[in-house]
Image 1 (cartoon, one colour):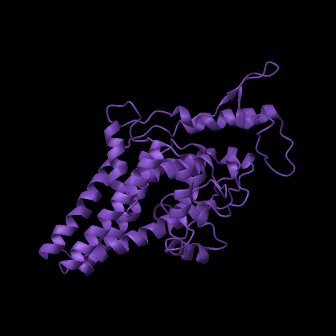
Image 2: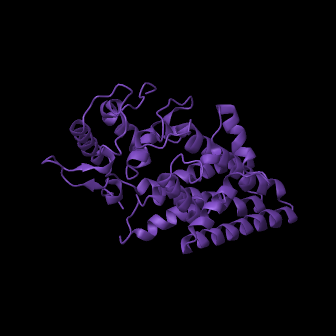
Image 3: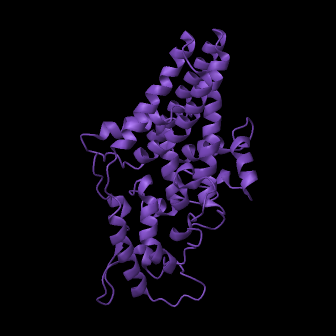
Length: 330
C-alpha cells in the first residue's frame, strides 16, 4: 500500500521481433502507429525507440506513497458523517458544513479514482481491503456506488471517446458554458443523459458485476432518499439539503466538467492513444481542476497516481511533442 508497483496492465502488449529488430508494442506497429504529424517521416524503429524511452520515464512515477489517499478518504467521510447527528443536536455550523460537504463530495471522486485502478493496493495484497473501502466510502456523498463508478470508469478507458461505448460521451458539449449546463441537464428526468447511457452499457455487458452495480446503485439511492425524507419529516430539511442534497449536485457537476469535459473536449474521432485527452491550462490551477490539466498522462499510464501526473508530464513532454501531442498549454 505504501509503494505501488508498476501494473502489468499499464504495459502495452508486445509483438514479436521483425527482421532482428527489438520487440515493439502493438501501438508502435505500422498498423496501429499513431501519426506524429501531417508531415511525419519517422520510421517504425524511431517510433519503437520513442516508446521505450517513454515507458522508461513513466516507470519512475508509478511508485509512491498512497497512504494520504487513505487518510483523506476515511477522514473526510468520518467528518461528513458526523455532520448529521451534529445538525440534529444543533451543534453544527451549517454554512461551514455546507462548504466542507461540497469539498468532500467533489474530492471523494479523486480518492475513489485511485482505488478504481487498484493504485492503493493490488488484488492479492494484504491491504486489498483498504483499496476497496477507500473506493466504497469516497463516492457515497455523490450517491454513486463504487461498484458502478469503477465499471463505468474502466469502460471509459477501454472505449475512450467512442460515442456509443464511452459512458462519459454524453458530457461532450461545444463550449465551456454548454458543458456546465449539460452537467445539470443530463441528470434531469426523461433526459437521455449519463445514467441512461450507463444502464445501456451495463445491459450490454450482462455480467454479474454489471448486475451488482445496478443493485448497489438502487440501494444507495434508496438510502439517500430515506435520509432526506427522514430528516425533512423531523424538521431538518434545510440541514439535509445543505449537507447532502446540494453538495451532491455541485460535486457531480464539478466532477463532470473537470474530469470528463475539460480534458477530453473535443471528443469526436479522438480515439487514438495520444489523442484521447488534451493538455490544457485551467483558470483555477492544477489542484482545483483536480489535476486534470495533464489527464493525458493518466490515460497513457493509469498506474501513475493522480498527484504525480504533472511531474510525469513534464518529464515526458519532449517525447509527447515528438508524438504529435499539442503541449503548448503547459
